[in-house]
Length: 421
Image 1 (cartoon, one colour):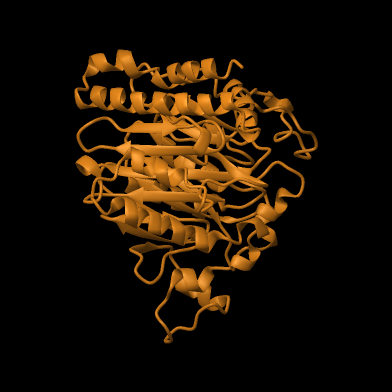
Image 2: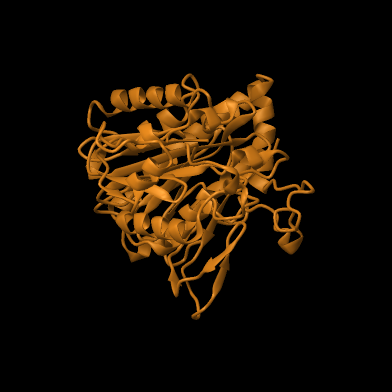
């Protein structure tokens, strides 16, 4: 599950493009944040994704990723070319038993696009090309019974000039260019009749499946392919959640000064269930602020519950590092996600920051004063960090990289100090 938001000029401060996402995953799952630098590969190299291998490209971009620790792919992330992607699962009338075959996850497609695309439009091409070649599907969780999670995927994609919404049903897809205003998705198909690109044979496939009658109503992608009955029961509030998200966007963009702070307000909203708790909860959150004039800044929690989490900045530089506090243990070839048959055991995937934050959440749940003091201190730290980061970005030069190349890991170190309970 997911709630994803895109806001563009003229609604934003300084003509920024802002992408935000809450990743709604099982409460037991750990989400890690990792950095991967750009790499070069020889011809005929194969790349192992979560379940299957794909052909590797000659060069990949540097990426910052927020991802479930057990999988290769990412729920959300950004690359050093100014592209950010957030994905969301959707359930369609083309879902079927074949989706349980091992293919690419939506998270794999998102990461592959970040590693390969230099613009939002290129990312659409990367995802749709891989979708056609390899297909999508298979279990989206490592817990027992996760096969019910076999779903299709939607993607919100942004760069410094515009955005795209890409929605899929099996190997079929439609995409819309978003040039201004805002857009949000919450695990249901949203594209109607006015998409700008689509897969070859889309209408023919719908007709073949008995989902569309040529010569009748205009072809509406969401109406034709949506099947909310297939979604897990926990996601029954998706349409309501999307509408509440849209209303929050309307309210907070009214002054046309929407920025990072306003996006945190949306992602921290518990009344709408956008900041989710329960069997599924918000296990990670990210905000990308992509400026036409300054380097993009990406803010990631690496911890559950954004209402009680600290957004930490990451800025791409030649000397990047994300530190080790948000990296989960690596079990290598013995990982239950890799050993056949898969997921026969459970392993501890908690990274150090997750463990510290869990202690803090326990204090909040018990309504202890110390927990509220830590929360207030973290919010003050976040405000100060935002002000300092904005000042650095406004005067950015090559020398600035010495200050910010490791800022994400540095802020994680400071955050950990608050958790030494």
